[in-house]
Amino acid sequence: MRAAAGAGVASPCVNICRMEGDHCAGCWRSLEEIAAWSRASDEHKRLILAAVASRRQRHEPPGDRCRTGHD
Image (tube, rainbow, N blue to C red; front, top):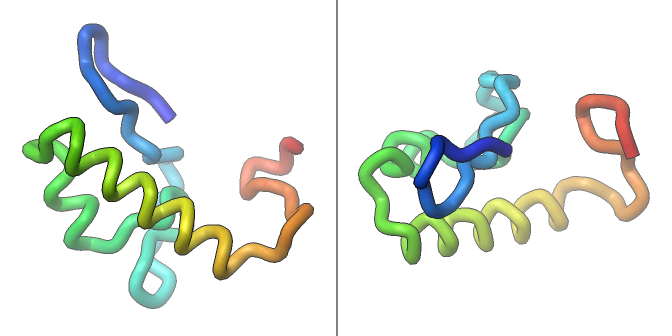
């Protein structure tokens, strides 16, 4: 995740931009969430990140390595 200098909430983008069903394989956001990110308030971004965390937890078994191969 990265944030621009002075930015509030960091983007979850990891430069693996490929849709798998209803979410991105890299950041787990929906197309709607990705499109809204740049104009979303920090509060809305935090809600998106909470949805991303929930989505990831439902789809990735505990203990799975992240997609970059690091623990």
